[in-house]
Image (cartoon, rainbow, N blue to C red; front, side, top):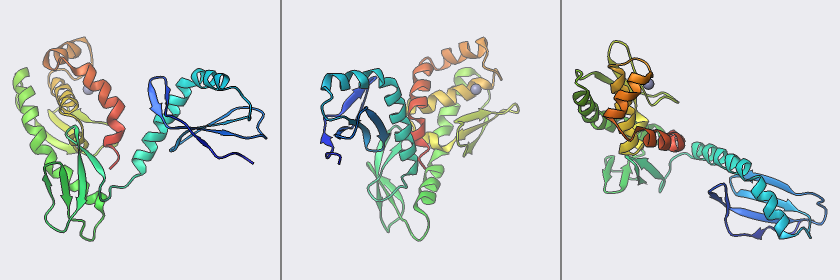
Amino acid sequence: MSRPALPQPPLTCAGQTLPYQLVRSPRRRTIGLKIDEQGLTVFAPPNLPAAQLETLIQTRATWIRTKWTECCQKSALRVAPREGAMLPYLGRTVRLSLDSGPTRLEGEVLYLNPGRGDITVKLQRWYQAQALPFFLPRVAHYAEQLGVPLPAVALSNARRRWGSCHARGMIRLNWRLLKASPAEMDYVIAHEVTHLRHMNHGPVFRETLQHLYPDHAEAHRTLRERGFLYHAF
Ligand SMILES: [Zn+2]
């Protein structure tokens, strides 16, 4: 019979912290590792020295970190928004409160009238309705900086792409960018506006983008890391 899991302090693996528990069992001859939404569980023989465990965990640190990240991503995508959910909005988080009044944002609380419909669909509609008024002035700003005419802008609902620019000069921006930070949003907008001049990702494109939005590399990195959170609904 396994002993109950021993509560352990959170573990840091390859720079990432995750919950950790140790289960010692007399029937075990080898060490086993399991990663799920609860964190890392280590199954070990009863008398295995702690130092040996620590060494094994550190040698598997990269694998643990990767698995944990995947696990967090999957669970974030599964959670349907409900009362009290913390929602990303313009780089901050707002709390969802279900309320029978009109849907509105007051301070850091988003009051949503659930009515009879699906909360996720209502939330998406609210974000979509907010998106263009935020995007358009940023597009206008970068178009002016670059000296190109203001393009037509439409929303997209793509599962992966944040934006696209068509040869005829229309820019499409994913409405979920409204959940991103202003820096991440600006990065995507500056990138697409740069395509109005250069329809490729060659050296001249990169040079122009660097000039237009000097922090693009950092914003690109954080968007790659956090983007899955913005796709949760
Ligand atoms: Zn591009």
